[in-house]
Amino acid sequence: MMVELSKKMKHFQVGVFNELANLKTKHIKEGKELIDLSIGSPDLPPADFIKQELIEKSQDASNYQYALKGIDQLNEAICKYYSKKYNVELQNDTEVSVVMGSQDGLVHLPMVLTNPGDIILVPDPGYTAYAAGIALADAIPYKMLLNKERNYLPSLADIPEEVAQKAKLMILNYPGNPVPAVGSYEFFQEVVEFARRYNIVVIHDFAYSELYYTKDKPISFLSVPGAKEIGVEFNSLSKSFNMAGCRIGYVIGNQTVISALKALKSNLDYGVFLPIQYAAVRALDDESDFSEELRNIYKNRRDILVNGLNELGWDIQRPKASMFLWAKVPDGYTSTSFTYELVERAGVVVTPGNAFGENGEDFVRIALVQPEAILELAVEKIRNSGLF
Image (cartoon, rainbow, N blue to C red; front, side, top):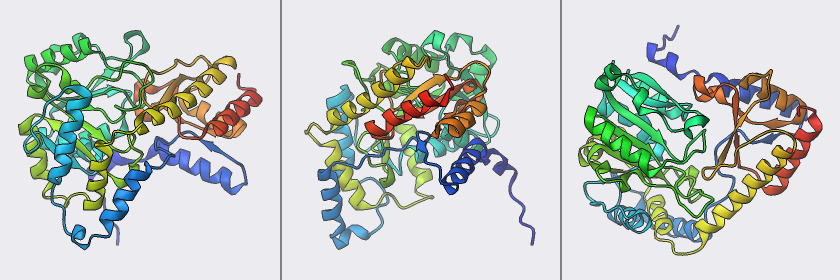
């Protein structure tokens, strides 16, 4: 029989990522060694105390029932964590909800808050999950351009009045992916004022909150006065605690938004595996040096790549946070052509910037997901490639 897909599926073509995967497979089959800096997934394991908690709770037979929602202990740990880290006070029963990784909530929430044809303000370049959520909701994206001149913060003043009047959602991401920019307190204040004026719900993706490399840690959007009235913040244990495969995250903030997402999710799944939730509690309650040690690892990796590549003549800005570099490609190349050339001539795999939106053209994203020795080798291979 002929299976006919829905029109919606045209929005979910893997495109550049599929081509890149095929290219990697081709070279591996040919026996070529590749250094893969394209995937934004931690290569490091969780701390031993997190793994031990998971092991112990997995031995308890009662933990194999449906979870249905976040356990009380986890909601309380999230509230305690935000109070301690960001001076944000939350009600654990109404202003917190656990999700299967922050991407789960980011993709589903637009369906909760918009109708087909509604406008969603979205960063360009931006994380690919945002486009997926907009497509599932049959909403219309309005792309807020991010550029170096504005420190990769969108210009709200440049959003046309007619667009702002029709917009239902605004999605922000600081520290960012693919652009490792950091949001300022003043910018978030501007966002709150803008959202109030036009009755727009703000979604802030804060998944890289613990990966920062200066004395000034990233700002939680909810720490800005009035933010809880107009928005929510997603966070995750994937990057902060190396629990990416566990698929656990949370959303906090506006009670109405939280309640509505809970209602949708109750029809989609039965919650996160209970031992993983207990492991998340252990992670959030941690008082050890794990987070600081993790930051130092990423900072050292960042410096190896930035210093080494700048010495080659590849001018790359040193990010203050996140786990990526955002690098302009040399003159004469597009994002895709340079990515292919880097694989062919150096055996180093990065992600072309146009995979994250039209405004990502002329850039590539480089993930800090290999040990220092491998990153040093990557610099050497690029040096020997003759590309610079």
